[in-house]
Image 1 (cartoon, rainbow, N blue to C red):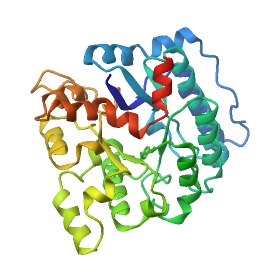
Image 2 (image 1 turned 90 degrees about the vertical axis):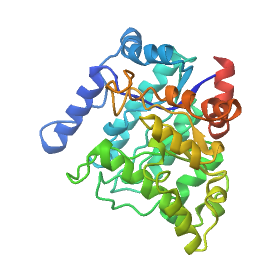
Image 3 (image 1 turned 180 degrees about the horizontal axis):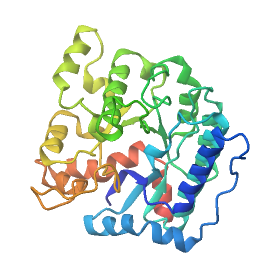
Image 4 (image 1 turned 120 degrees about the horizontal axis):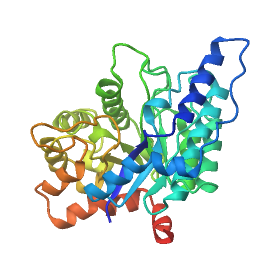
Length: 338
């Protein structure tokens, strides 16, 4: 089985965006009441909306996608805690409906109702609801709810500890995933995403988070940002700071996906990062949707790169399936049921 750990619902029906547009408009119009109910979306509309995902799964040889709301639309910097909670619940409920319609193709991961202006109580509640009631197997955790201004404490700060306690208690991982950038210095997918991935890794290197939470599992997407390319730099920094060796630091706690859109990038990733810490991911249909003129294939057809990498069959099986089953243990029961 091929498990894609990183897929977003980027083709949701237009009613979802209409709800969001009304919600945002009400924030600046005192006479307007924010919408509370999403316009009706039929099961047939949901089936039609995920056809691009299903087609790519079939064409590229992927069996199941770990599926979450569109990352750039989380936009935790917009509105307040009530805004974020209403928006988040609607997004997560749609993911649940898609997964119920296609249980063999999609498994849910939730968005969190983060906001710069409130603590994490709503996030604990929504994560618990999604895991225990909707059958989700993880979440996307935004290290920068401010949208590119980085006003939140580092991920290793005790501010986050109540949420980490819930992750560990539920035995689910978090993917460290920022959202839209409202800072014009940082293009969302070309800079902000990759900056966040690199920043998160450095935060983990500097502190003893995983000593406090040995069962905590964090996935750094987009191939780990700049980390694999500068693996020697981080090895050297860890050595200078008297920190653990990188393979020891990340062994049970930090994982990278394969959302890297060319063969040399995947080759580098698999050469320097331990195979046990790499999960197959594509981010489809996502950040880069075009066809590479050098290869004639879609940039985000990442399985093609993993298949061509100079690794043995056992290593490839870990990356394509085995590691995801360990990092997302709740997926095993769901796949047996499906």
